[in-house]
Length: 121
Image 1: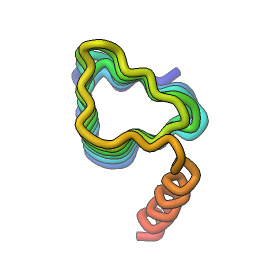
Image 2: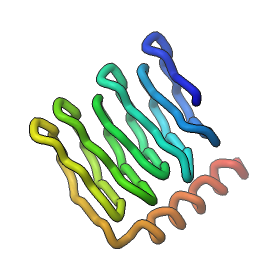
Image 3: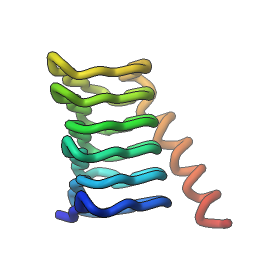
Image 4: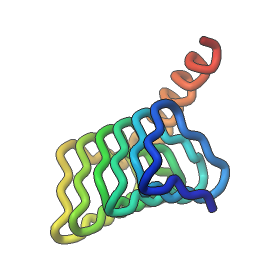
């Protein structure tokens, strides 16, 4: 498991192949296909988050795309679309955006295309 600590601020794309916990700030996409991503209560992510399972305790601005479940806990704030086959929304969580359980494959294809374009630059 990897951890981006409270004192870390990353601007740019984050990629991981193992479970990832974010405690600090990330400005840019977080791509961890097939693994778990946790945004702790101190985390702020501005960009799309892609993973197998995504758990949000903190703040997220951008799409959350999961192949498994997105779990938005009490006190969390999500500004953006949630695209996942399953969603758990706890009492006290706030979501400002749409929830789309049927477009996971399409969203992943778009994100992979955008990633290839970024890699080619």
